[in-house]
Structure formats: structure tokens, C-alpha cells
Length: 442
Ligand SMILES: Cc1cc2nc3c(=O)[nH]c(=O)nc-3n(C[C@H](O)[C@H](O)[C@H](O)COP(=O)(O)O)c2cc1C
Image (cartoon, rainbow, N blue to C red; front, side, top):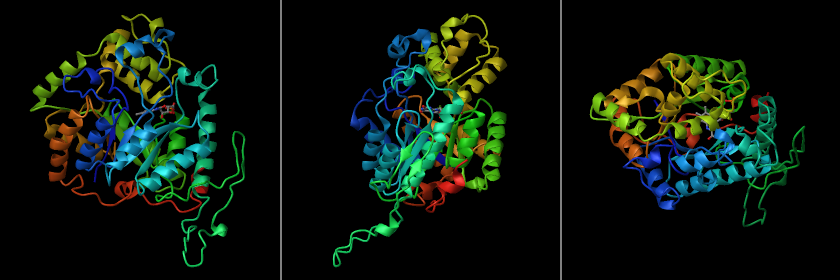
């Protein structure tokens, strides 16, 4: 069975998406997220996934002007209240929010997700990111993005503390016996007394153990340290690829890393990003894609790429090739750009135009063509499903739910009803027992 997540900016949908003639304008209103949540649940999606960044990007030319002018990576609502709202109007859809380990404290984050997991009856997911922009660091008293080893070392200790806090209440700690007056069993609640390099946390958490044990942990690191971290901690890896070959290589690599850490590789779901452009046939879909790409200016696309790689691209000749970049923000996105730009021999300006309207996964065609590609990727061992990105919302999700979902169901590749009540159950993931953190840490 194929799993489907939906990628949803809590703000304007991409550099071109907000300009699309069919895009709904209300991305700062509750009604917008309510509508999308309902569409995704109608389509039996496993979860909605809200990305995030803690700054208005200012990588291009050291200024936030391009980001504001083109709606590139800004604005962004806080994803946690947004997913709470989406959960309140659904009963089965999983809801996942991005929260950075770089600029929060583990106690707050553990409490936030434990709360959401209770309120949703076990439908929450946390996309663990280490953040990648200088502009984010500068909002939290740091001059620039800390080096990758430091980011992942902090993330490692962060996850250890968070999972231990979730485990600080046994599943049966609350008795709530009205007759005896005993509310909870103190012997089932423990302090964690963590005294580490970066955090000192006594515990226990002020919220009982989440219904899912741990909310579903999602990760999208693509560097060596990112893959190793994800292979141990993640339940779901979100990635993006420029070719089937690179997707297969990535899939094999992280599943083997998970196995090497003693995990069942099937308990780690790999979901690449894919942006469908659906037409009556492939010609119609290509025309729609062309019209979509025409909505993006070079500067808008370069602004998007500059903040993803955390490098000021105005330093390079727009009519020359992209020189090798030494220290990049998101390693995964950088690799995809290099792969595509070398294959197509693109200049910096051409890369910008392509990147601004990028539709990962080549899902361009009729609903049947798209279902073919989805099946092909899953059968080739490149994916356990996809995170569907919408060119514009909510219409692109509505079209996908109306056409591609039934096609996948007809082929017996996608559920016709939710299997379970929790996000873990729908993803086919076991509920971690108390103490699971010991097996996952480095
Ligand atoms: C498909 C994809 C989606 C991502 N989404 C986010 C996001 O919403 N917010 C964020 O701060 N980082 C995001 N990232 C960045 C990673 O999670 C990670 O923190 C960053 O890439 C640095 O790790 P790396 O160098 O190991 O890739 C994303 C990365 C990929 C590949």
C-alpha cells in the first residue's frame, strides 16, 4: 500500500503558487486550512505536513526584499496552531508540524507535541529540522548558521531528552479512581535528571505519555550526519530527488543504515516529494506546467534557491554555470540542483527560473500517467509513498483527490478507508514502548 502525505505551506504557496489563477487567496484565514484538511481527509491522506522556517529569508543579496516581493519563503504562520486547527475539523487525518531543534528547548517541544497527540487521539507528527539559514540564527542571538556537526549534535541530545520526557509517564500512570480518590500512581512517573552537554532537564514532563508513545518523527536531512540521524530516530523520511536512480540509491542507503542500527527497515517509511500537474493527457498537462512555470521570475526562483542553500547567488554570473558551493544549508536540495543543472547544462538564471516552479518527481500527465509513475517509483524500491506538493491550493489537492486517488484505489495500491485511528496505525508503524529512546540514540 502506498502512503500519502501532503506538503502545505502555512502561508503563500510557493513563488508561483499564490499567483496561479485558481489559487485561493485566504492563506491567513482559518477557513483556508479547514478546507484543505477536509479535502485531504476525504482523499484518505495519511497526513498533512507543514514546513517552517524561523525567519524572512534574506539570503539573496543579503536583503529580505526579494523574499517579500515574490512571496518566496514568506510569510509563514506558526505550524503548530495551524495543525491543531486542521486536526479539530478531521478525525483520521494525521497532522505534522515542523519544529526546529536549533532554537527551542526540548521540554517545550516535548510538551507541545504530547499535548497535540492527546488532543488528536494520536494523529500528530513532528518534522525534526536543524534549520539552515543564517537569517534564522540571527533571530536567536547567533551571528550565523552553526556548523552542521554542531546542529546535529544538538538535535541528537534534543531527541534523547524529548523522547525520555515522553517516557517519563508510564502508559498506566493515571488511575483517576473516584472512589479511592487516587488520581495517579507516583511510582509510574519518573524524573529524567538529564545532565548533558547542551541541556539540563529534570523532568518529568507535565503531560502524560502520548497516545502514540512518541508522535511520528519525520526527518529530511540528506547529508551524511542527516541520514545517520534520520535512520536512527525517524519513522518517516521526507526527501526530494531529481531522478529515479538517485531516489533508489537514497532509499537503499537509509534503509540499510536503519538495519545496521538494529531497526526493522520497514518501520522507516521513505516519502519523496512530488508535485503533480494533472491534465486530460500529457500534452494538456505539459501546457499547464508551462503556464505555471511562466508565473515565476528568475529573481523569485533564485531567492527560493538562495535561502535553501543559504548562499548569496547574486555573487555569480547569471549567464554562467553555478560554481561548486562549499557550505550549503540544505544538502539535499543542493544535490538535486547540481544533478539537474549539469544534466540540462543550465546557467544560474535558468536554474532560478526552473527552481522557482520546480515540480519534483515528474508527475506531469493524466491521472493515469501519474498513478503509473507513483507505482513505478514504489515498485522500483525508491519510495514507500509520496509527500504531495500542490502547485496551488486547495485546487491542486482537490484535483489529485478527485482523479489520482481513485485511480490508485482502482489498482489496489491505495486504501479505500483508513486502517486505524492513529497516524502510526495508518502508516503501519509500531507504537514505541517505554524506553525505546535507548535503542534509537547514537
Ligand atoms: C524535502 C525537504 C524538506 C525540508 N523541509 C524543511 C523545513 O520545512 N524547515 C526546515 O527548517 N528545514 C527543512 N528541510 C531541511 C532539513 O530538514 C535539514 O534540517 C537540513 O537539510 C540540514 O540537514 P542536511 O544538511 O542533513 O540536509 C527540508 C529538507 C528537505 C530535503
